[in-house]
Length: 374
Image 1 (cartoon, helix red, strand yellow):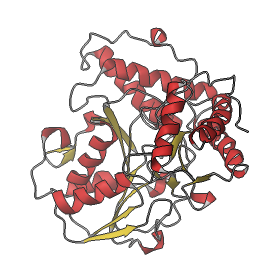
Image 2 (cartoon, rainbow, N blue to C red):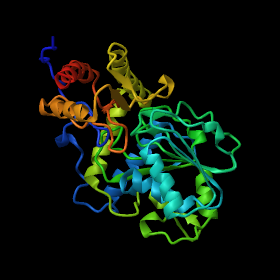
Image 3 (cartoon, rainbow, N blue to C red):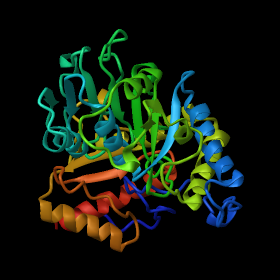
Image 4 (tube, rainbow, N blue to C red):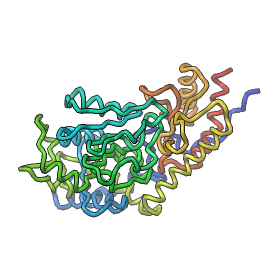
C-alpha cells in the first residue's frame, strides 16, 4: 500500500547547493541600502566594503596577518585569479574527487600548461590518498566536494614545515566546517554558498606566505587586469582594504553584511557549523531507516554536512521523475545531483536551511519514491 501524500510542506523548499537558501527571516527591505547609487570608492562605499572584510576576518577568527579581499566572478574568479597569479615556481599536486576540483586540474594542465603537475584523485564518493601530497610542492584542492558530498576530514595531511603553498577552494565549507587556517595559504569562497548571499563576487583569503609568493614571483604569461594582485612587485593592499579591482554591487555587499550580522547574532562561526551538522543528522537518521537511499560519500567521517549527495535504488529516469514531482508539489527545488555527478539527489544542509524544513521534506521523499516505483 502506498504512503498517503503528506500534509505538511517545508516552509522554505529551497534546497539548492548554490545559490543557497537565504537566511531564516531574511527580508530584502531590511538591508542597509545607504550605499546604493553611490560610488564604491566614495567614503561611504569604501566603509561598507571595509566592514564586510573586517567582519569576515573577525567571524572566521583568521590568524593575524591574513588578508581578506573581494574579487570578481564568484569563487571561480577567485580560484582562477590565484592559479594564474601564483602557480609556476614549484611542482603542483592537484587533489580532486569531484567536478570542480577536476576543473582546476584541467585549468592547470590545459590552460596554464604546467608540466610538473601530479594528479591525486578519486572517484565520486571517495577521498583520494592525501598522504601522497609532497610538502615541497604547491597543493591545490577543494575542502568540500560540492558535487560529490565528500569533504576533507581535517588538515593533518598538510605539513607545518611545508615549502609549497596550499591553495584551497572552500566555497561550500567556509562558515560550515572548521578550517585549520594556519595550514591554508590561500582560501577562496563565494558568499552565495553557505551564507545564502547573492552571486557574482568571490573572496580571497591570503596568508603571509601567499603574499610573499605574490611579491617574489612573476608568471611568464600575461595577466588580465582583473587577475592582478600586485603592482611594481608589491601586493595591491587596496584590494584588501575595500578598493576592489572592478566595480562591485553595493546591493550584494549589503546583502552579505546582513548574512554576516546574522552569523554574529546566532553565536558566530561555531554556531553556524553546529547548525549545519544538526541538519546533516536529520538526513543521517532518515538514510539509516530507509534501505532505498544512501549517501554517495562512502565514509561517515568524510561526509559533507553542506552539499549532501544521495544515491537511490532508482533508474535515472525515475530519479528525474522524483525530482520533478517534488518541485511540482512545491516541496523541494533544485535537489537533483550535479550534471557531471552520478545520478541522485543533492540536498543543501548549510545553516541557512532550517531543521524543521528538512524534517518536513523527508515524508515527501518517501511518498515521491513510492510514486515513481509504482
